[in-house]
Amino acid sequence: MERGEHLVASAVLVALYLRGAPFPRCVCRKRWGLVRDALLSDTPDLNLVGSVLLKHGLWDEAAVVSTPGALDWALERVERQEALTVLSPSYPARWVQVLGAGAPPALWSLGTPSLAPPVSVVGSRNLEPTDRQFAHRLGSWIIGSGHSFVSGGAIGADTQAASGALATGAEGRLTLILPFGLNHATPDERLCQLSVCPPSAPFTAGQAMERNTLIYAFSPLAIVVRSAFKTGGTWIGATDALRRRLTTVAVRGVSGDRASETLCRLGAIRIRLKKDVLAAIDASGSARDDGDQLFAAHG
Image (cartoon, rainbow, N blue to C red):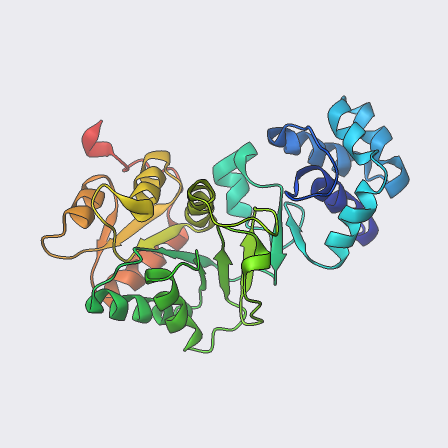
């Protein structure tokens, strides 16, 4: 696909699916694969997009891109690198592999995700001093192993681990996936910030759950620094990731901690030391994403 054709195809995905567009839309997001395939097969110029979509039976989508100004607005978002689409070279390919039609076809971006193999980090806001120390070291271990760092930007485990990663000089290898619009984010050239939310959208619990799925599905390994037991976003996200087999989940094992012990019984890997973390990272690079072991002990 030529550069001009790539821009047009990405602009169509932005016009149809990027949340916060200033024009009405009524399309099924899970049909984005059909739209992508239609655009890749016919590689239209901007003036023929509607005709190509109609040719492939995508009537609702054709109506949206025919809205006056819709494609111009979308093309501007793409050219200004404000949007990341499934056609972008830096789009997390694992989202499509794991989430299929549920992967976001377009989302807002500040910066570009690293192409280095990713490791995700999640965890509670409320940490013990030993948890904070572990999270900080974890960020540096991930970067030191040649990987990129993915997290949710929340206070607590996320920010502690990100701080450790940045302390190693990891500019360009951090990606934060946020549960609110990027108008509320602080621009930072050292990292990439992504959001599926409209730019001015405030935090909501529902958006946080959607964000958590994207964090787990982004990487072949997600490390849980600390979780409360049967409550809170970290617990919900980790158990959901294990149930849906989104990734390999590793959890910091703390003696007597019910949450970490239960997550391990559900299929998570227990880690305690740097060598455990590096072994889990190494294993994730060659492991299959079939998740056969998850919940095996529970039928």
